[in-house]
Structure formats: structure tokens, C-alpha cells
Image (cartoon, rainbow, N blue to C red; front, side, top):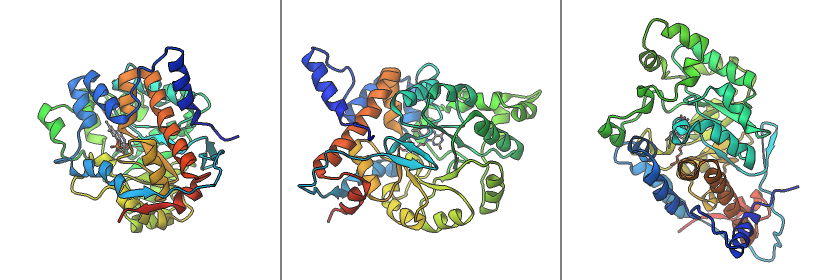
Length: 379
Ligand code: FNR
């Protein structure tokens, strides 16, 4: 039975007939500006800001307009299959919530709120290492929806092993190892306010609840200990060790070159996550979307996760058209949660899915094979 995401649209119209107009914006631009107005200034700059003059961050978004979808008529695409099977689990739709380290601060117990939205929508979340509540506590709120854990690999190998093994034991279904953030990029907005949440002791619950970290921090300062162990500049030689830590699928986040994708797959990873961290880490790059087709080609049958610049259901469909298996929503879900708590986030996720589903309906695409066959670069 395929999910009928498009029905969300008629729900909104029929509610309006009964005098109930939704409080939530229907487009991302309005959602973003309203969310920014309610976030405290330090979080606003942390969420909105990127590296350098933010050229890569803007390009991530703008470049989606360089690709277009060719409509196909008389297909009768009344039933559409937007489901995706990833490492043995089938999800009703092709999106997931990308790891966002400060989501726990965006609303009260924000990581738990994300898990609750995952439970309500079936959209899986990939939870950051940086959480306000410990990973064991958070996953319990995701109901039947699978959850993934994102690892910022610490310099201390025992701590890395402990985090991964805790995630495995708690029931997470895969580990995303983020490669591009062993040190933060140059972020003028955060530098201007001197604000970096983790250095103020926020979102460190997975560390402070960890027996290995506690040993490392014994008699010292938690934040300083955290800063000294946080970022491991991994090399190819570390992949075998990472692989040995868990039976769970491992996906590498931040791979943007086909040679890196091939080498990682040869080393035994289970997925490639093409992303430039939303332009928050390295400025001066191409957009992640421009790099996606070559990465996807190098991956063959190995799943390709993608994020960076996705702002709508249309963007989701285009990313799938260019080779993504599953598409990560980043900042937009932060905005949904900031503005409307769990209901605001659920609305955002349902809106993205409804738009993607309706786009496939009117364009005559019953499935993602049709999407891929009809995605073109604009002249
Ligand atoms: C992130 N991202 C991120 N990635 C990661 O692997 N671990 C993390 O803890 C975080 N934290 C984080 C915080 C905030 C505020 C943002 C906006 C992003 C990156 C995230 O997973 C994703 O790659 C980007 O958000 C994609 O870019 P857009 O689409 O949000 O612009």
C-alpha cells in the first residue's frame, strides 16, 4: 500500500471550508522568516549562518533551478510509489531529517520533539552526536519509525567505540560518520557574536552520559575536555577501524568526489552521503547538487543519501532525478520546529512530501525511474 502524501493538500482545503485556516506557512520563504523571528539571536546566526561569505550556501539553493523536469502526459499516474528501501527498512517516502546538532535547543527537548515528529510522519531522523538528551532516551520517542545516528568521530578511539556501540544497543539502524567537520569552518556570523553553542556547554548530553567521556573529564572541565576530544581528522587508514566497531550499516557524510565514493565503497561502507554540510564548513565550493550525478554514478547500487540546499518537495524530486536514493531535509525542518513545535515540524514534513507527490502526479511519474528518465539540465 503506497502512502497518499498528496491528500494533505485536500485536508488543508477542506479544513478551510470548515473555517480552519492553517497557522503554518505553506512556502519555505515565509516559514524561514517567521522562524527566524522567534529564534533567539545566538541560535538564529548558528542556524542561518555558513562559511565565509556564504557563497556555497547560497549556491546550494540556487542551483536547483538549473535542472528541470519534463512532464509526460497520458500516463495516468494516479498511484505513485514514493517509498524507499534502505538497508532492509522500507520508508513510505524518500526524505529524512538530516542531523542538526542544535535541534535540541530549538524547542524544549528538541531532539525528542524530532523523534515524535518522526513517529507521526514515518520520516526517519538522523540524530546528531550533539544532543540535548542522551541518544538512548531520544530513540524511544520515535515509535515504529527507524532512527539513524550521526557520529562526530572523537579523537579518543574508546569514546568513539562507546558512542557507536551505545547507538547500536539502543536500536539505531545505521551510523552516518560525518567527515567534513572535525574542525568548524570559518563562520563570520557566529564569530561576530562569539557564540558557539557547544562551547557554552550545550548539546553535550551524549558525552556527559558516556562512561568513557566521564573518565576523560574526571577532575576537569567538561567543555574543555569535549573541545579536546571532539574532532578527529580521519584518514582512509581509519575506515577499517570504524567498520570494525559495528555491524550496523555505515554511511560516510560529506563525500562529494566520485573517486572518494568508489574508495569508500571498496573499503566496505554501506552508503555514501553526498553533502557539503549546507555550505557551513567549506566556502568556495560547487553546490552539492552539481556534484551529485557523478557521485551517484560511482555508487552503482550502493545507496546515495543527499542534502544541502533542499527547500521543497520539488527540490526533493530533482535530487532523486539526479541520483539520490534518499534526500535529507536540513534547515527547513529546523524552521518548522522553531515556529510550531512538533505540529509545525509535522506540517513541514507533510508539506514537502505532498508537494513531491503532487509534482509526480501532474508530471506523469508513477515512480522514481520515471523521475530519473525525465530530469534535464536547463540549457
Ligand atoms: C547542521 N549539520 C550537521 N551535520 C552533521 O553531520 N552533524 C551535525 O551535528 C550538524 N549540525 C548542524 C546544525 C545546523 C544548525 C545546521 C543548519 C546543519 C548539517 C546538516 O546535516 C545538513 O548537511 C545541512 O543542513 C544541509 O544544508 P541545508 O539544506 O540545511 O542548507
